[in-house]
Image (cartoon, rainbow, N blue to C red; front, side):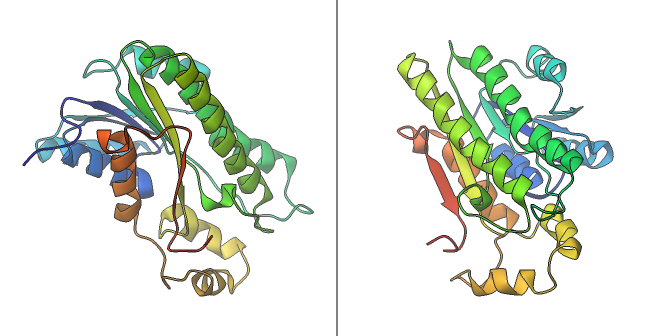
Length: 251
């Protein structure tokens, strides 16, 4: 059976859990060698070992995505050869209204969700612009619509949305063989969502389901398959686009 990403090398940040974990597995099944990065070391190492046991090329690297130096190190020390695919997936969500969100939480959210995507995208463009590649920035429908409970998350994901477009235009107009798109999942059953729910209104999940025409939360595998699409030649005429996968929530 033909695979879409044979001989490609992919970095997936925040790869230990949730959408990142599912994305690593989905990319590997399509033939890509995987560099799993995260600050969650034990789970990241376990994922890389599991992929290797299944016959895939995979390693884990601990990475603080907010560190400029560590981004340079990840690209310079790639064990499987030059990087072809970067999935900027790492992210956090800290609930709080505009009245009670602390500035420290605001800055931490921006550092992980937006600054790190800037650093990763910049590093990838510098390394990929001659030979080509793909960048997928995992955004959120919270970058498209407002939510009174997560102003920092809204702002960070809105920033990722437009950063992606700006970078994609720069690469296309510079003639680089490099595509950059953003992926906007709706509500997905992930540790990030589950950990946030206790700090959100009690009826938050029920209301989110009511507003989702398909009547359910997404699964991580469903999001991962759309990452594979964007990373593959199936999406060869897409750049600067935002792919929404939300069960109809924003429709």
